[in-house]
Image (cartoon, rainbow, N blue to C red):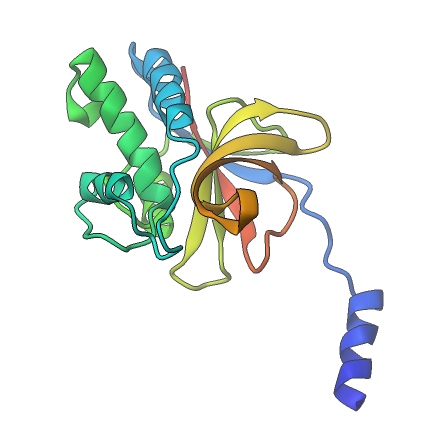
Length: 198
């Protein structure tokens, strides 16, 4: 009983301060950056509605996302799906795979850490942009999530394309989500944004 009262007291009187600015990591751009961002977003949108068969990361299409980053079936695929979208755009334009501006990995933590080590610059800002990759992390654990921003609205609200997320009727798959760049998502806090300049 005392524990419950203490938790209630902490929730009422010690609310965490809202995030006022995010770390935004700017990645290198080239002459193809804009068309790659645009095409990869279109291709990701085409995947909306792909769902898992049994809510266990299982679907032949999902296996393709995972294979693009060298992972076997039934692994988490939120980062793999974003990479797969860029890979398809690269193939569409017949460009070199090196033009994908972030790490080939299925790990959101690894992708973010790599980008931070290879950035052009890092700024703090409270403004997201279309095509930004929004990253969350579960504390200091090696788990997180990522979504591609496709629309920016007021007061930190954005629409994203996300792989490996919950959508209609509790089905896991690829969905468009409404998120707030300053809000906690379950146990995940926003880590920052990868921005590919164009």
